[in-house]
Length: 200
Image: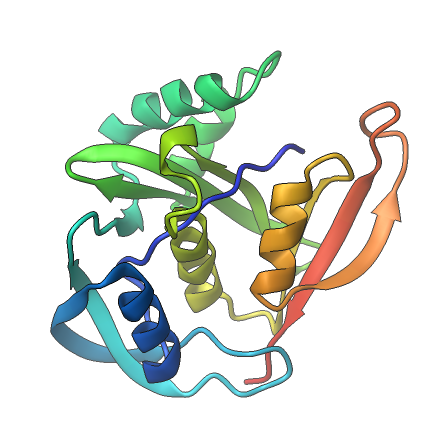
């Protein structure tokens, strides 16, 4: 499966250090903190309880949230901008109905989305798509962090094609480890699997 890269922060539970890192990078501050939750953790470390960041008040800030029914079409339109030969509309509609579709919104526009599911009973980041003009701004990082914050299986897996160097770099930056290769899914372009481990 092809992945797109890019990233920025949103409505996810974060450790104080990680949150500060993102807000300093973006030049923003948070507001309206409430409700204890699980934070984004480092590989092999317990994820501490922290406050849930409902909003990020910063220029160019992004909000990540579960997609509403009306946003399936927007996610599909974005998908068609960055992929070719794939019609994921039915998959996106199913993911939204099951609460597995997250969208990243900036200034009222959908600039990215992620879907997640299960892989041999473990949480799996299935798709990660960011609008080309919004890549390298934290959108992908925010979407991955949101998926991580909901992970309860102890490990989070994802995969990407060998040709997708940006996604491989993102995985390395976010603490994912190599977890094997599957041949013959896309001819001549093996699928690389990655895993991020958590302790509970």
